[in-house]
Length: 285
Image 1 (tube, rainbow, N blue to C red):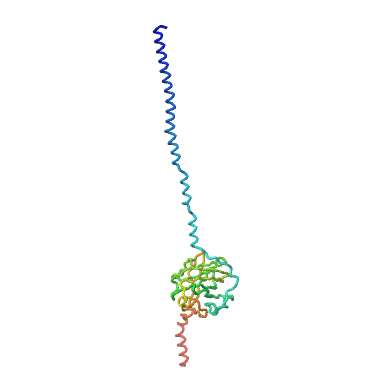
Image 2: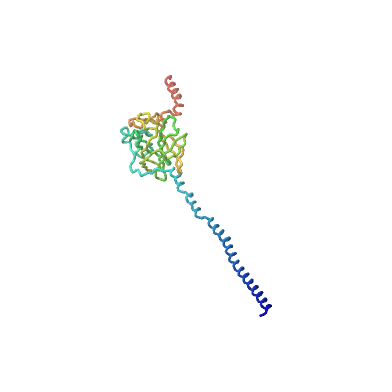
């Protein structure tokens, strides 16, 4: 082989070597570029999914605390009432029970429009009393206790209502002729019955502000009233009996006089002068 042939062979080999090097470089660049692309694109995607943290949202469940709202109904707790299977009577009046009635001395065990309440001291020091209440109403009957002769100033009131033939019991405050149910006065052992329009109920109650042993601390103006009842709404009470003085609830011998019967009627007052003139005229004949 001459020199020219050797030179041409060397050039061809060099060019082939350079071509092979370029191809090898291109093949290595591709993986590197793909690897870097994977690092660039895939990593952000992974971090994006980690930002969508659904688990922390589960903490919203404790915020949806519906149970505490149910406690609102506890403010309207109804006193349970069991059936009263016997008639209220006046057998213990002036013995162990203070009694008041309209008409006076009527027997609540006998059918008729008799309004009656009896109160018996159970524990004087704890101001615990047992009550019997009887009356006629298509709505409710109530017994009230007032510290002043001007009744209707947040007076403690115990209400027995005719709820579709069954007794529904409330404690309430009477203020300016309006009964407001609160059901917060301590009461237990409530029994009741309804026969036509005759309502009877018995219960035990801790009378507010009657914790001392002095008679003045257990003395109240006593009242009996009735009124309308509709869907847990009490109408304004109509007075049936108002005691003429404060009576000691611990003294069964106290006679309760109805102040509503003590005042002479307007008719009697207007007729009195005419009767007097007539009598004087007959004397002059």
